[in-house]
Image (cartoon, rainbow, N blue to C red; front, side):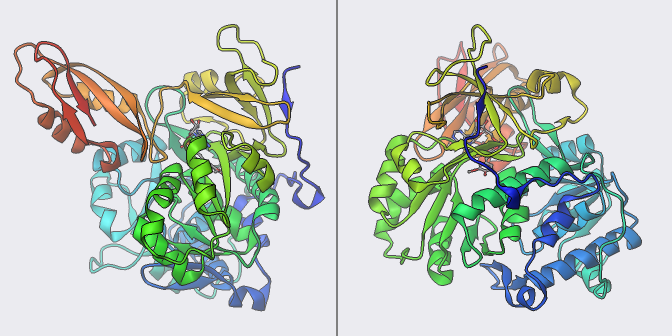
Length: 522
Ligand code: 4UW
């Protein structure tokens, strides 16, 4: 039939709950350690402030915030709440509180510009925003009522911390009927083509992927683990791990607001971190720079790599340098609500440094010939299609893009080229969609092109990826200037920089003969 099934079994312990009346927040909270254990066990530690919260405190904060949002601010089922914050001890509290009352969570990169944020606020139809005081200025122009995460000198704005304090004796969640089929989150991804779109994920999608995560954690994590979180929680990778999945396992997570290499080394040594979900540039940095730093990395037991390809050579070099650390690659998409492949055994992972795992239980795949559209046998390259209970419902308000991405049998076209071998090992060899990945972050060429085209002196623009060892890919723009214009590369770069998130801009420019395109490496 050309359909590949996961060779792993989920087992009764991780069976995906079928009862309709269940929401992701209740599921996660039901997995927390009980009573006194919960008050002793630390869920999160902030690396900057050393502030920590236990599982017991986290539960009480979720109850309090959900109560305040529902009874105090009248946030209702279906209302969209926009969250703009780097990783923090409050992040998962906010997510769980919002989801527990049937409201819909939409998250954004705190580095996004005002323009990008206004677009997402508008597209998602956000009714309420929650922001750090530092990012507040980006939300003010949208006119959306905004809560701050923590109190600031500006007394006009209520804060999440105050709301939690105000409802501190709440003993339970407000009673809101939430069904698994209800929308839970809208995360943004450009998918296979065009600009960023709202990926609509239901409670059922999140519950499915969380149960699958718990299955994978059974072979890769234990309650005594200390995880490090610099993968941002606004992205599906971080949200699944730190927002939901690891809270079900009961580990302690050290939070970094933002990745930096030195900070990571310090955190590992200080907190005896043993498990790090990471992206290829982090593996690259460890291979290139860790030996010079004299930091003690002996506590590390496992590091994950995903969100972008890791080369076979880099994988082998890493293992040579850190023979005591297991390196596990995984592959996923926002549209599949997180990880679709994973290596359950280190022996398998070691034997396939070019691959990104085997299908996670309950996932099926097809490898489709891109010429004929027919499914292919093992070891033949084609577009990877995926099916599972975690596949997104749709792109928000975009039936055309939805139909082009999820077919009538609910197969997701990933836009990734790869093959599956006879043992079920999945290998991604190339990206055939328009998407560019810079440090694991999505960059939509269409978005940069439309920014460039909005410049009065630019008549045409095309953005392509340039391969880069350190960051994966860098977006590069070809720009055609209006005839006779003296527009320089610097001016174009400044223009783009003002409108898109700084991780997506400028490095170099290369001058071409003035008559034809200016080439800008953005
Ligand atoms: N190799 C090659 C890979 C790989 C890859 C992703 O930003 P999105 O939509 O989503 C992600 C999600 C990553 C992720 C989530 C949960 C999880 O457990 C996990 O395990 C490590 C990873 O990145 O981008 C999706 C696109 O990113 C590329 C690929 O093109 C995919 O369609 N990509 N992982 N291991 N390419």
